[in-house]
Amino acid sequence: MSEYVPVLIMLVLAAATAVGMLVATSKIGPRKVFADKMEPFECGESPIVSPKLRFSVKFYLVALFFVVFDMEAVFVYPWAVLFRDLGMFGFVEMMIFLAILAVGLLYVWRRGALEWD
Amino acid sequence: MLTWSLGFLILMVKLGAVLLFLLLAAAYLVWLERKFLARLQVRYGPNRAGKYGLLQPIADMIKMLTKEDTIPEGADRVIFLLAPAVVTVTALLMFAVIPFGGDLSFLGKRIPMVIADLNIGLLFVFALSSLGVYGIALGGWASNSKYSLLGGIRGAAQMISYELSLGLSLVPVVMLAGSFSLVDIVRAQEAYPFILVQPLAFVIFVISAMAESKRIPFDLPEAENELGAGYHTEYSGIRFGLFFLGEYVNMQVLGALVAVLFLGGWSGPFLSGPAWFCIKILVVALVMIWIRGTLPRLRYDQLMALGWKVLIPLALVNIVVTGAVILI
Amino acid sequence: MTLYTCLFYVLAVAIVTTTGIAITQRNLVHAVIYLVFSFFGSALLFYLLGAPLLAALEVIVYAGAIMVLFLFIIMMVKMESIEERMPPLGQWLPAVLCGILYLALGAVVVYTAPGSEFPLQTAMATPVELGKYLFQRHWLSIEIVSLLLLVAIIGALHLGKRKETGGTEEP
Image 1 (tube, each protein chain N blue to C red):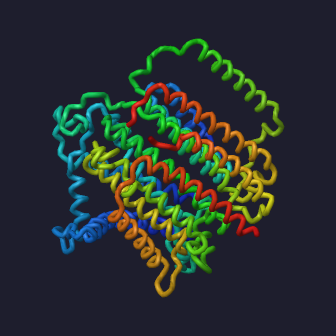
Image 2 (cartoon, each protein chain N blue to C red; image 1 turned 90 degrees about the vertical axis):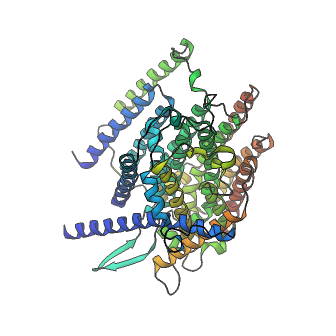
Image 3 (cartoon, chains in turn purple, green, orange; image 1 turned 135 degrees about the vertical axis):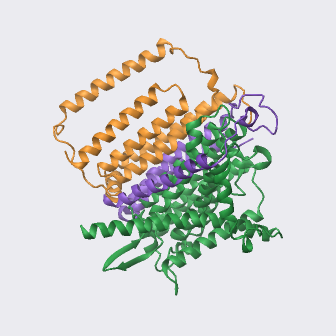
């Protein structure tokens, strides 16, 4: 278990580097606040509509498909490690697994959910 | 007690060296990119600060540190502050599992040239790269600007799509090596580098890695002619710098991963391990810059189609074929 | 108390606290971030119990995928449109009933299961051991999981398609 201690130390050091830079810039940099400067960027105009836009449902679908296929990948990783030990049985097992999900991917594809138009 | 403190000392030296190297190399990668890109476009690139513009990264660093760091009105202050740090920290931490040389002996002690040889090394990298999405999405959301939000959402959707092909393309490599540990994967390539047996996985991995790092031709989240600067439109000073730093550290990590997974890692004739490793990273980085200088940006539908309709099916087919070939 | 026990209790408190904040937080994006921290805590707990593989998978799936989905949905709905009132009875009553049932079942399992008096031994589960256990002993569950995921894909597609007719703007 001790092989994870260096990772922890590295996390602390990396975070310290990033936070140190953030703190340094807030100490060093000038600070002149006035209303126009603090407005969000809008090509020189004042913002007219709220930035909380509505988004295409496509993005949401992509995230959903990602979750499903990420679950698939999560099962494939441990299988890949001991692929040789499992032999033919494991191979066939994973092929059925992948085939079922390939059907899913094909279905989504045929229904046009992957088109971005 | 003595061996323990010696081990700790060695660890701290390694950590310090790696972090310092990563930060410095990121700064000079920016210089290299600007210079090489300029030459590709028949320009000079930075040439004012120092000879060949070699002091440019230092000048940039000083400039970013001394700039005012503004927080736009209506921004979510805490998230706005921390999002760039998330990008940088996740990118730096990925290097913890990457071996940069063979074992070294020092005072009769064997020192592995890797910070932590984890038996889940590759999954550690995947986990961190999936967390990197938060820096982009939250940074874009917290800015209270529509360009930032659009850039953040686009970036997140792009990163998660290509994370799948990235992960799946490496499954055949894991099958060949029989381990997630990056040290074991390098050892498995002693006879021949995996690029020779897995050219398809290599291509899928490199394309996905470029999309993950949001570089041209995949830079839609920060497409300057439609979105200002995308998710970091509202960022100034060193916070913008941290996004930038994260991007270039990421480029090194991806170069290192390509070297470790496909090009035989640190191994090579004549030169020492770390030297070969740096050369391989440099070659990958130069190729990435070259691609940036050559290709135009993709459209969003092309981006998604490439990820979901080409790379993911190809990666799945590659897994099946590799499995069948190994077994039969 | 050993170091492991100490760490366990620290983590447990952290998980419960972050989850509690996530539930009571008005700002939905902050709630998601607290939930991410909560999943981190669970991942560390898995690691502490000797299963680093599960810890990594927990971060990849929960913190890296499912929470990103949540974040997407929250970023896409207009924040102003969320009214500050109690949801209708039909929504929270089943939730409360399910919660009570879950608590009761949990209590029964904890108090009647053999071996609940002894803490679990930490045992190192390397990726190889875990994979063997999963793929040799539970091969049927793996196939069922894939069918479940297939159903999830189709369900997601139809939910998304139905929403699309409601008129959305292209970004």
